Structure formats: structure tokens, C-alpha cells
Image (cartoon, rainbow, N blue to C red; front, top):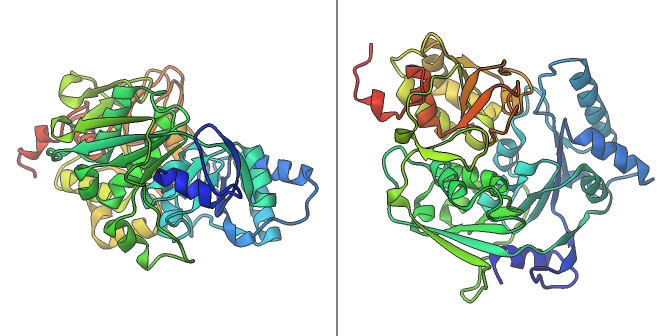
Length: 422
């Protein structure tokens, strides 16, 4: 069996997981946020049950519209907060929180070999730690909260192998953008994307989180990585419970195997209005932007902020560009502060936000007006994703995003890193 199939098999009373078959699966963790939790709570109450299956295995994080941007978001968060308190769930809010998919691994709530379901499509982020993690609808999440089970069709697994060596400024974001550009937004439809190869072995955990996060943008049910020394080092002091590591069998059957020479992949940009509409940054041409956003559950980790600070140090954001930088969690915010990164950002005339999804989904903290363009390190650039349907969103890595913020147009960091700074 593949890694994903092994995890599902051990979480099913059938004891096996064959692609295409329907099985009941026991879950280790259930997640909801301020958009999806109110719907799940309503459906949970309709079930007529009085308690959740296990309060220590249900997490709620209001991160999309928080700090509350208006009365409606305040009411949603209040409903969520009261439900969490009533059932003694794990709950994070302003001042003790972060973007859910950054926060949960950081807090040791997601571990290898587990099944994690969340009422958010980017729940697949946790596959970076060797978990089977997938997004589900609020009704399914309500049932999971009540029973600790889900019902699903076992997905086939596609294997993506990256060999060679990463070029300058190329990171996990470029690998996944290139991959989605190659296979399309439905190229892995209802499949598990298993990522492997010598390049993946050398990739830091932050880069793996980014890749797993965007598996959904290729239509995947989940993205997953084998658990190696880097993953074990990450969770060693974080784990809150015991876990079991699984790995794919050598004779495991894959629906498809795709190989890439990573040495030929250069920094990528996804043009409007699909993550698959990708080009190398050097082929973009002169496209001026009004806003740059660095953050989100895709690229709001400390390594992302370090890259941004390295390029921004001693420079200024272009006077016609708004640059918004959003640490993924309070812990990351504090470390960035201690390392002096926030001072670099402020002196460069960027703005630093409290951890929030905010502009990624057009929620707040950077909504776009008609005719505006934004380059973001987020994961989606659909029409109207960040505000007006007449606005445009481009996707890139933090390195390209910072270079763009400085020059006022989509640019490679090579264009400015050779220049002197003040």
C-alpha cells in the first residue's frame, strides 16, 4: 500500500484501503474556523447529540475575519467561542492564535500517521508531517465532531518525484506552482499527491508545508510526504500525544508517477485567475502592482519572513505599493520581533499585521478595489478572491513578492540583490 492507504487502512474497521472503495474512517483531529464552524455547529445541534466524541480532538480557530472586522464576524466568533467553551474544545483566539494551518503543527496538534479533517480546503497542509489530512464540508465536520468518524471514498495516489538541485531563489512555492502549471487545477482530482525525490529530501519543513497546502489547487484530496529526520525533529518537542510513522511499500501501486528535473525550475508566478496559469518570473514582462501581501497559511512562516527581510533590508517599498506582511502565528511574530525582522519591515515602509488570513480571501486587512493588482504569497488567485471582481491577483514565493514590492512591478530578486542599498 501507499503511505496514504496505510493510514486510512489502520483507521478503518476494514483494515484495508483500496482506491475507489467507500470506508468509514476514524479521525484523530477535527478542525473548524470562523467561517465554517457556525455552519458545523448548526448541523451538530440538528443531530440531537449532547456532547462531542472527544473534546481534546476538536480544534476551533477564528482566523479568517479576526480580529473581528464587523458585527457579523463578531457574532460568528461569539457563537464559535461559546460552543467551544460549552464542550471544552481546544480553542485559540486573538493574542493566543495564528492562522490555523500554521498554528496546529506548531502546537503539536497534528502528528504523523493521523487522519485529520477540517472544514477548510487547505487542511491538506498537514500532509507535510506524514498525516492524511483533508478538507470537508461543514455537515461532514458536524458528524465528525459527534461521532469521531467520516465516510469517504479511498483516493488513488499519484507520486511526484523531484530530482536534481534547486536553483537560486527557488523554493517549495515554486515547485508546487510549476507542478500545478504542468498538470492543471484538476490534474490530481480526488487523488493523493505523494511528494518524493532527492529535492524533497533536502527541502525544509516550511517548504513542505507550502507544497502540501497547495495540493488542493491541483484538485487533490490530500498531499503527503514521508516522515524523515527533519519531520521528526520538528515534532519532537511539540507532540502532545503518541503517534505512529508509516511509509509507502516499495511495491505500492500508484495511479501515476510524474517526475521533474528541479534544476530546470525557476522562480514562478501564477497569473490571473488560476493557480495553474504559471510562467517563470523572467517571462512575465512589465506588470505594475498596487499591493503585495506576504503571509497566509502558505507562506507566513518564519523562513518566509527571513527571506523577505534579507531582500528588504536597507531598501524601501515602492512609494506606489502597499506591502502587507502577516506572520502566521504569535510565536512566529515574536521570533521575527526578536530577530529584528519587524524593524526591517517597518523601516522599509511595509506594514506588519497580527496573525490573520485577512486579505487572502478578501476578508479584511488589504481588500482590493476595482482595477487594482496584487502579488501575494497566498494560494489562490480566482476572480474576486481578494476583493473586487475587477481586481487581479498574482501568486509567487516570498522572494519574488519582496522584489516586486521594491520595484513596483513583478520582478525577480536578482534584479535588485546586485544593487547597492542605502
